Length: 124
Image (tube, rainbow, N blue to C red; front, side, top):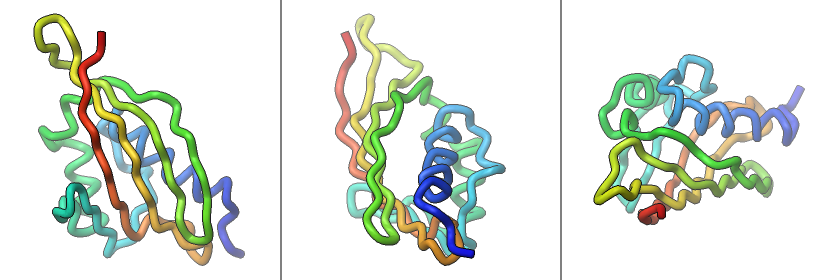
């Protein structure tokens, strides 16, 4: 039975939750999942992404996220949200506006590809 839109949104939400919790064991990555950020491949497989989310220093600085705004178009699930990091700079926290596009085919409901656009900002 094909995955519903709600199930595919839940898969993307599991990834976003793992950005903050640093526990990606429940993220439904396809084995060959890749991630691209700023045109650079930052995820080389589902297992690589899971290890990175669980312990990678690039993710350990993330403190919280806003509630994502999701849209679904065919096999694509798009999530727009903000992240806030733990470190502060002159009393202001560093954050990022994140726009991630997930390829999550209804056929299996797993994340096959992620394209991230990240725009940093300082919080007040």
